[in-house]
Length: 140
Ligand code: IDP
Image (cartoon, rainbow, N blue to C red; front, top):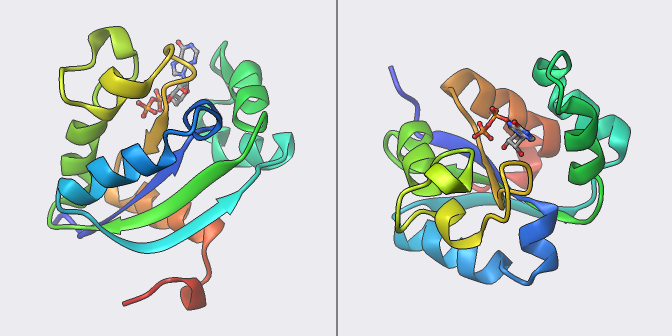
């Protein structure tokens, strides 16, 4: 059964371009409630841990360098069917394939620098949220 929580990051390109506010506005306008939020910067090692599922992929090293290249904003979001509704809101991994009205269509620069992360399953949403936030940092 779908849970009501997902995890997102505003990635370094979008944060650096000053798009955090506009992206957060789209997230809230789509009915997601922010229950945890943090501005931080990943080390290359921490990015490697976060994306370890991709460590066999050819883009892994570049992805870790990119994700540690500047600050990110991490958030836990709540909404019914949060994971699948948020994947729809962000659009396809490659912005060239993202639909109009999606966050990636509007803000992503490339398949790598694609503005936002969105968990791909309820299980990963919990793992990824716990990577950044303790229980005390989440509001109920
Ligand atoms: P997702 O973020 O849409 O779930 P994943 O396949 O899980 O996409 O990939 C994780 C991240 O790795 C992407 O958001 C993107 O930043 C990067 N990435 C994915 N595919 C490529 C690629 O072919 N080249 C470079 N970077 C990629």
